[in-house]
Length: 104
Image 1 (cartoon, one colour):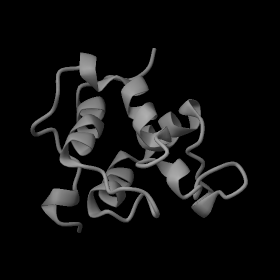
Image 2 (cartoon, helix red, strand yellow; image 1 turned 60 degrees about the horizontal axis):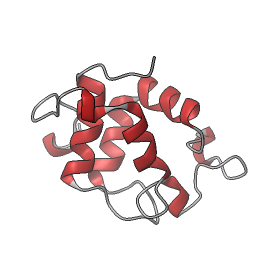
Image 3 (cartoon, one colour; image 1 turned 135 degrees about the horizontal axis):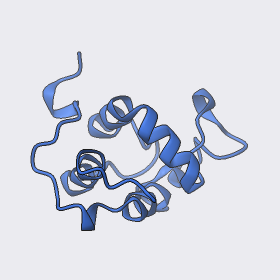
C-alpha cells in the first residue's frame, strides 16, 4: 500500500467552487506541470494506453482510477518530465474528487 501521503483522502479539501473540473483540466494540460510537459499521454504517445490530452479523456481516467492517478501525482512519478505537483495542486485534485465537482 502507498504511504498515507500518496493515498487519496478527503482531508483538507477546498470548497466545491474552486475545485472545478476546468481548474483540474487546466492543471493537467499546463505545459510545465501537466502531461504536455513530457507528452507521455498524448494521442501518438499513449503510455499504458492512457490519453490525457483532452478534457473528456482526463475526466474518464481520473474518475475511473482516482486512487491510482493521485498516488502517481503525489509520489512525483507523474508527470514524468514536468514539475512535481505542489500540495495546492494535490488539494485541488482531492477537492474535485471528494466534493463531487464533476463536470455537468
